[in-house]
Picture 1 (spheres, rainbow, N blue to C red):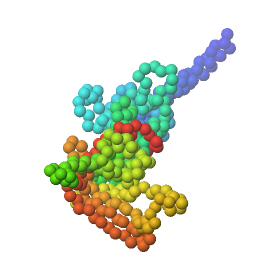
Picture 2 (cartoon, rainbow, N blue to C red; picture 1 turned 45 degrees about the vertical axis):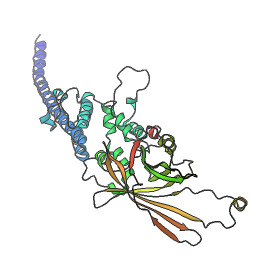
Picture 3 (tube, rainbow, N blue to C red; picture 1 turned 30 degrees about the vertical axis):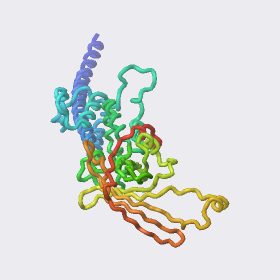
Picture 4 (tube, helix red, strand yellow; picture 1 turned 180 degrees about the horizontal axis):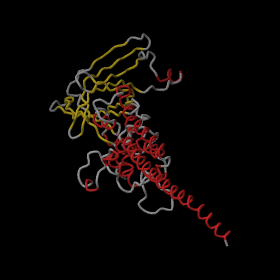
Length: 397
């Protein structure tokens, strides 16, 4: 009996220190839990700050905050709850409340980006409205979607189609405002003359507001006059003729231009000017360039000439040509125009400032320049949009 009491006393004495140790362990665990919560809150604050910096275009600042957040909590990206907007003061942001949606939103792009970020833990460009058994376009990576958007714009710079595509949903609106697409379009139009954005705020603003020629249609000039005819045989009357003809200018983004002078009306000519590979014999082909002069006028200078015909065989030339043929000569036309506004459309009018013909005689190499007087026969060109010119995409932007 005494041995049993001694064992119980020894056992109780051993239990007392262990109970104190368990209390210390519980306190340590509680302290660690508090530290983990504080660390996670700090990491959340840094991560949301990085998201805002990235949306504002400060990529380097965003990387710094991302790194700091992941050093505190490596998987913080999957622990953040995006279902409700965080406190704006804590993360340094200015998130818009729901009641501001009905009012005027100054920066719609930033608002859509914030909404997509807050609604989904893994933001997607778009979400299907209805349940689908097939793969939805929202499952594609952003890089693939941007490549599709470049096909929509195409090498013809159909920015109107891109603006229409932005009306589909918020995600498409964000993709349609991608600066790289608009920068590529500006480089196609102005080349080395658009290395700086100043005075514009964005590449899209430059493309829409800076004067340029348009590629989604044709410029048409109509000239008409009355000409006196020959006197009749009996001498009682003299006929008068009403002469009417058109000039057409079709510009392409790669710097090529088509010029045509013909009495045929636009209904029959415009569809045949869709590509440079037209079969009309009287068409003139060449190149153009835009020039911003000191007088703040945007001018267009073009050099065009007739299509080079295939050389006929020696037998055909001896058979059909005259014995003393005229010396071979090459006719090159130099055209100068300046952009101006006409009607409701901005810079939709081209006014003549120069027209000359350079004739080079191949046997001697002599060149004769003839400058034409810009009289009332040189009526301005007015732009007409042609939907069929941008109906198909042959190459991406």
